[in-house]
Image 1 (cartoon, rainbow, N blue to C red):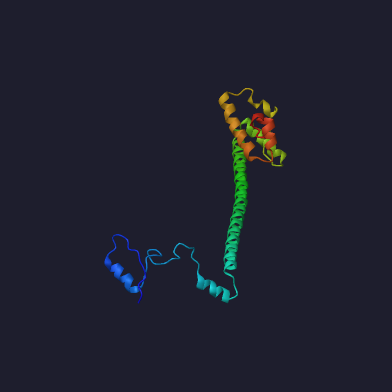
Image 2 (cartoon, rainbow, N blue to C red):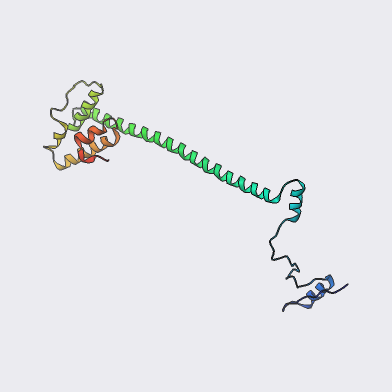
Amino acid sequence: MSMKPFVCFEGWGTEVEVLLGALGGTWAGGRFGDSTLTQKFTWKKKNEYLQAAGLEPGLVKKRRDEREVERQLLEQQRLEHDKELHDEEYGEWLTKEEKFHLDNAKARTQLRIEQGRERPLDLVAKALMIAEGEQFEEMTILDKPPHQLFVNMSIEEVEDIMDEVNTFVRIDAQHRDFWQVGIAPDSRSD
């Protein structure tokens, strides 16, 4: 058996030297005796099998990358579709919520009118309801234009009514222009 040269590092005992010498190893190619340690690793056997199956290793990797891109595209489309469905459901929910608030505001107005404690703004809302075809026992409405309601009111009363008007502006889409122009011209949101 011929001895191959080896390089011994400090701290390594003679057992390693003897073992390497007996096995015919060398330190010349690195710690493990592999001169290809610094080269890029490729699966040679795998590539041979792929070629035997009629496939090229580069094409297989390319197809895998294309499938990954397709998967990411499908995931993105699914997320966009889910977002559209969510937005549609949210829009329906907002519409229902606005209708609920409008119905409550109308119910509060009708309750005050029925109990004889109506506010001037309730009479304006009553006039709009009458214009829509609703019937009341007493069909009395305002005796002056709506914008003149505020003439003899205190600041606190005006602030309360403006809060209620802003509620109508926000929730009564059918009469929004009336509420903005006729009652609260400064509450327009253009």
